[in-house]
Amino acid sequence: MKCEKKREPLAEIIILLLFAAGLFLPISAPAESGPEYGLGVKQPIAGKWLRPDGGYVLELSEVKEDGTLKAAYFNPRSIHVAKAEWRRIGDRIQVFVKLQDINYPGSTYTLIYDPKEDRFTGYYYQAARNQTFDVVFIRRK
Image (cartoon, rainbow, N blue to C red; front, side, top):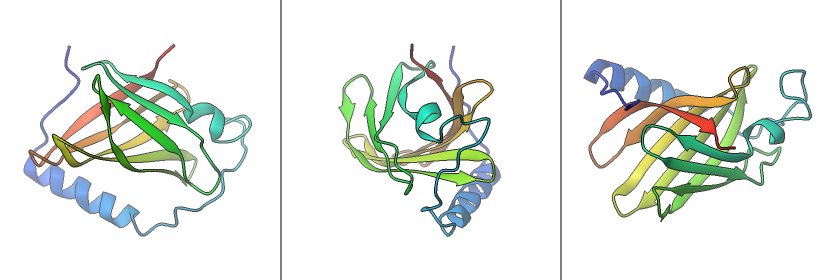
């Protein structure tokens, strides 16, 4: 049961352009409390998240209002996380994680939190192969 799909070259270019444009948005927007997020951004995104198509685990903690957070990634061993941050885009929460380790030379996750489904959906850019895949992370209970 794989969730990964190979993207067409044009789709990859569009995704990368949209992502690059997002880099210029301010990252330090404060987390606002709202009905869909309860007490703020910390509650819905902190925790252990499982990518069911391969057993990969993303653990998010120390979520702060300045857009910083601590991330750990396991496949199944620990993979070094070089960068992790979150931002609010409209009423959505986006998480960006950059990996820097053996077999993960700059691979990234760009994920959007879905509060109704309590899951992340987004893209995994596998830098070693220059490929982008659709991914889903569900909360690990």
